[in-house]
Amino acid sequence: MKFLFTFIFLVAYVCSSAQEFAFEFWHTGKIVLEEGDTLRGNIKYDLQNDLVQFQITNNIETFTARKVLMFDIFDETIKRYRQFYSLPYASVTQYKSLMFLSCWKKENLPCFAESF
Image (cartoon, rainbow, N blue to C red; front, top):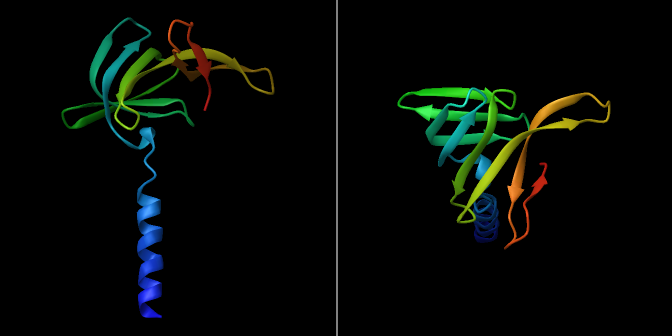
């Protein structure tokens, strides 16, 4: 019985730790701000709240979708570059706000945006 409990616990732990999401990690990339400045370094993003964090030495700066034109990262979890653009989006109330949309390229086709 004790062996069965230990085995189930270990399987549950391994399964839960195997789920890695890109937004949980720092990625190498760049952020282009609305003023035209480009920041290069470690980037972490939160698409639920439309935030991007930039890490420089011991400081972390946070930017909203209103301050960012676009950012791109190299996503280690899928081994490819990803681009996100700050674009206006009308919610159910028709109030337009800026949110980050991901641009996916398929071979020679133009990119399409995806909301999360």
